[in-house]
Amino acid sequence: MLSIVVLVSGSGSNLRALLEACDNPLYPAKILAVGADSAAAGLEHAEEFGVPTFVVSEGNFDSREAWAERVLEHIRFLKPELVVLAGFMKILPEAFVEALSPGLINLHPSLLPDFPGANAVRDALAAGANKTGSTIHLVDKGVDTGPVISQRELEILPGETQAELHERIKVIERKHLVDVVKQIAVQEIKLEEIAR
Ligand code: GAR
Image (cartoon, rainbow, N blue to C red; front, side):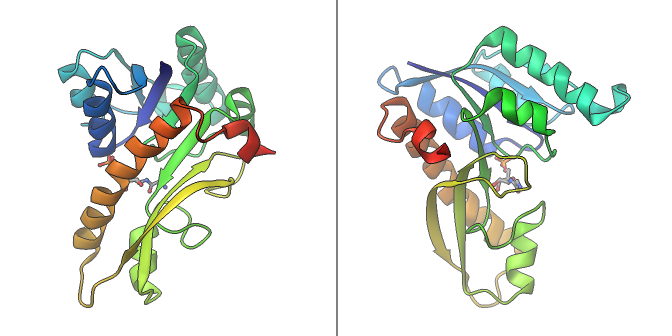
């Protein structure tokens, strides 16, 4: 059983998909806790499923490094095998990434290396791209630059708004995340090999 900590900043629809998957006794992973950098709406999903939550707000710390160190303390206490960033919108310092690698993965709403950063859906539309998708990648010290684990494509429809496109990407992302976490759990995907 793969043990996971999920970090969120937003509505947590991808977290919810993972919570629902983990609720099935045949699914080979378990969420130990869900962390957030603010009172994110997504934490409610964890509470509904009886999964413990923790919040560490960056504003309460003198530096990003001190904030990340506190997040890391929570994670070290829980000892998960995998940490999943599911809509966690903070850039993590190198020491945090090094402490958890290769067991730290991120979900991103574009086909990386295209459109990294916090506004991937807006940027894909602004660039006139005709396809985008979902990427799950290892986190490294850059912003959305780590080795790609898996990608799923989606055609961009003419006249589609940013909200419409993001919602269609999220539908793909939810299944993608559940599938990839399962593949990691059963060692069909080996993160140490992708990290090499
Ligand atoms: C997802 O689309 C995820 O890929 C994106 O935030 C959304 C979270 O949705 N992450 C990033 O943009 C990271 N750069 P959710 O809160 O409904 O799961």
